[in-house]
Structure formats: structure tokens, C-alpha cells
Image 1: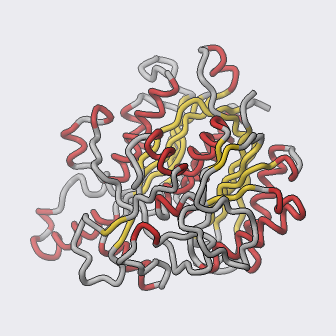
Image 2 (image 1 turned 120 degrees about the vertical axis):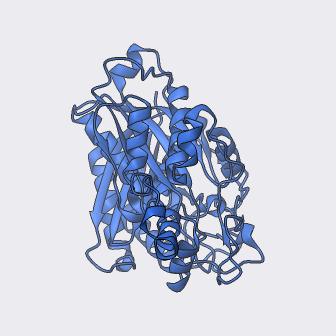
Length: 411
């Protein structure tokens, strides 16, 4: 069985436009959530979000193309450019037939759909942009990255709601392990902060309404949490077959060793009772890694700041890990980024790789009043140093779709 390592990381979210900025903000519990600036939200009940700020595409993409391109694609391009630079891979090479892309996107360009629907209604078909469809559909983050960087291997987009990014990384891991690829650009991207996006989640009573205190609105595992905060961005990892990476002297951040996925078969939006599907997902990640439960030191939780998710994820962790759950460090970085939907798993996988490389655990921001039904060590408010061996990252999504990625420190 081939071994798979992480050789590059790139990140864009509400806390920064590069990996270093995003990681530092996560470690400092510094929230990027603020009042919505993309549009006037005065008629909405929710007026806060984790928007990407001061974004510049730089040399990640041709400026003319960038002007007509959706945000989720631009975020993916920026994070990919950073990750490839960090990896030192030369994608202009002629032997990229087994270098591919697997970038998950949950929604795609929802704002573009809204905008062009109004144009069609008010101005007619001739005014609808010919670029609307190509730059709206979810797979175009992976597609445009593939075209820009000459990646001619597998080219896939996992669209599995809020698990999309984790499945994107997991699928890339499987392709390399099973000889379908040698290098995979993996992760997740999302850019769906729009009036319809906010209104739809608000109609479900899923969003926090702390409009006057945006930076503390996302508070995973806190008794006073009142919903998630919508975020956006991209998290990209370069996965590479170990011998391929060693042959070129690549820096290795971590090794991917396990992947689990499952279906709740229960409800379109609510998790299964007790996190039953999440339990099976985490157990599968452990099984594919062939390690013991006691080997896990840290879990980057899905931790959305919603009532059901945080409670059932806690229950699932306790069911899987038993007595060892009390020794685990757990945290959710959504306290600073918001919930980035399809990008969340990619962003959080970059944080997990950084945690293993740096020997640091990012905190759960805004966790001041722990929920008694969430009784684990959630690393509240302040990060910590730790000798980490293995770490797990969870993502769960509408439709009962679950994903877990397992990494180890590379020795």
C-alpha cells in the first residue's frame, strides 16, 4: 500500500489570505467574522458573516479572467498557488498525467445564480453572461485549477454539502494510495455568501442572530450558542506519494493515513441520534489507518456552533473513544472562520497538518460557558503546545453525509 504525504498547504478565509495568517489567527482565537459588506443586509434577520477581506488574486490567475470568475474559484486558485509554491512542484513538466485535482465545493456561485436570474427577468436573455454557467457550477474550482496548472490526472469535484472539502482530501488520498495518481491538489472551496444564501439558512433557524456582536457569534460547544455563522474561503493541500516526494527532497508537513465516510440514512438536515453515522465514519478512518483509538491525540471537530451538531458530535466521540475520549484534545476552528460549508473540511485539514507539524493545538474561540452535554476537553479560548502523533478531522453535511480524515506526524 503506497504512503501519502502532505507537501504543500494554502489557505484563504475570513482571518487571512495565506496559510500563515490563517494559522496565526486560529492559534490566537482571533475571529474574522464581522458585519456583511458584500451587500446591504438590512432586510435580513442575519447581518453577519465570515467574509474574505482585502482579497487580491495576485499572480494566481490572469486578471482579465479573474474579473469574470466566481469567488469560490478565485479562492481555490489563490490557495492552490500558495500550496504549490510551498511544495516546490513544477507543474510545467510534461509528466503530469498522474497529477490531479480533487476540490470539493458544496454550493458553487449562488450569488451569480441570483444575479443572473434578475438579469434574465429584468433585461432578457441577451444580457445573461456567457460565462455565467461555466463559472457557476461547482466542479469548476477543480477544473480551472487543473487547466491553469497543467494537471492532467484525475479531475473531480466532491459536492457533498459541508463534507465536500473533507471528501475532496479523502478521495485524493485514495487515488494516490491506489496508484491512480502520484500527486493530488486537494481540499475545498466555497463563496456562497449572498442574500439568498443567508436568507435560506436563516429560514431554517440555523444561523446565529448575534448581529451586534459578530466576533463572538460563533461559539462551538458553548451552552449559549445560537447557530453557525456563514463563512467562505478555500483550503488546499498538496498530497504526494511518499517516494515521489522524497526523490525530490520535498518538505513534508504530515502523512495522511486514514479516511472514513458514511451515511446517516436518517434525515435531510439533522444528524442521526447520538451521532451514529459520525461514529461509524470515525471508526472507518481508524480502521483504514490500522491504529488504536488510544493513538489519537487531537480531533479537529466539525463543531459548527449549532445545538444538535455539537451535542451529537460530542456523543459520537465519546462512543468511539470510550475512556480515551477524556484524554483527547478537541477543538473547533469555526469560532474564528465561521462555517465555510464546502470549504470547511479543506481549511480544517490544513489546520490539522499544521498542528501536527508545529506541535500546537488551535483553541475553540468564544467557548466561555461549556455545555454540560459536551463534556470533553475542547481547548477553550487558548491554544496549547502538544506532542501530537495522530490527529483526526471531522466533517458532516446535509443529507447525512460524513467524512473523517486521519493524519500522523511525519517522522
